[in-house]
Length: 402
Image (cartoon, rainbow, N blue to C red; front, side):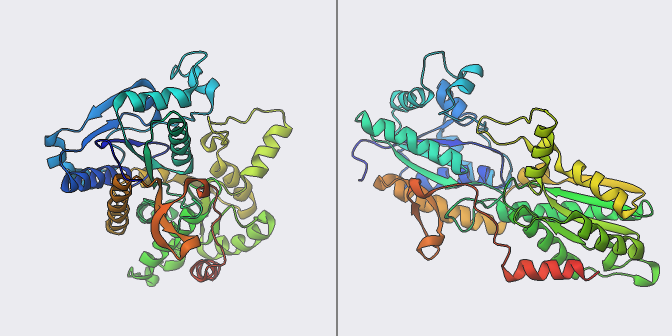
C-alpha cells in the first residue's frame, strides 16, 4: 500500500560492521534527495539502542548535499549496536529500557513519536526480522510503518539472498591482509601461519578470501632460484564449518608440505570446529560466553589458538603465528562491485518504501535471483556455504597440490 501520510524516513544500522554500511546510508540519502528533497530523514544513533532511547540525528540539507562522501568510508557514520528487542532481560540489564517495559513496544512507540512512516534497517537477518516485528506491532495499533531492510553480512549467510552487502569487499580486503602476513613464512624455519577469517557458521568468507588471495598470487612474479616461490606463499589448506576436519589426516598431509617448503599456510574459518571446542569446554564445566542472541562469542573461544596448538606439534612447527583479518576486512569502505550492488539495493529500497512495500531487498535465490523486496518471514540466518561449487573444489585441489 502506497504512503498516504507525508513520508518521514528513519534509518538505522545494526549488528557487526560490514563494508557496506556507510555506502548504504549514503545511497539512501542521495536517492531520497533526488526523488523528493522535501522528505524528512532521521538516523538513529547506534542502531536499536538509539531507537529505544530516542537518540536520532536529523539529516540536514548540508548533509544531503555531501552524502556522496560516505562512499569513501568504512564503518557506520551513525553507529551500530547488538540489541535483541525480544531479549527483555538483556535490554533491562543494559539500561535500554526500564523494568516492566517491553522493548518491542518501546521501539514502536518511539517510531510513532518521531512520526516515522518508512524505516530502513541495514543489517543481518536478526536486524531485519526484528524490524518486521516492530512493524507488526505498529500495524496492530493502527500506525502502519513500511520497513525496508538491506542485507548486511560479510558471511553471506542470509537465506534466500544470493549476495549480501559487503561480502565481496571483505574477501578482497582479507586477501590484501594475508598478502603481507604470508611474508612471515620467511621469518623463521618451519613456520606455521594460520589466517583466521570471520564466519560463525558459514565458510563463504574464508573460501572467497582464499580464492581472492590465490588469484592475486597467480599473477605475481617469483624468483624460484632464490627460494621465492609460489609454494611458499600459497594457501596449503582451507577449513570451513561445512566440511568436518580430520586433524590427523590433515596433519599427515601438511607435515609433508612443512618438510618440503619449510612452512605451512592455513586459512581457517572461525566457526570451523567450534562445536567440538564448545563441547570440550562444557565437558570441563567451563561456561561458554554468549551474546544477546545466544551466539557463542568466538573471540572468547579462540578457534585459531585451538587449532594452532593442535597442528603445531603434529607438523613439527618451530614457530606459530595466528593472524585475524576480520576487523580490517569488515571495517573497510565498500569496493566497486559492492557499491554497484548497494546502489541497486538502495534505489529499490526507496522505491519500495514510498510504495509502502515492506521486505528485505536482495537477489532472491528462490525467485531466479531477481532483485526484489523479499518477504520478511522468508529471511533467515545460517545459510551454509555451498562447498560443491566448482570454484571452491578447484581451490581445494590447488591448495593440495603443493
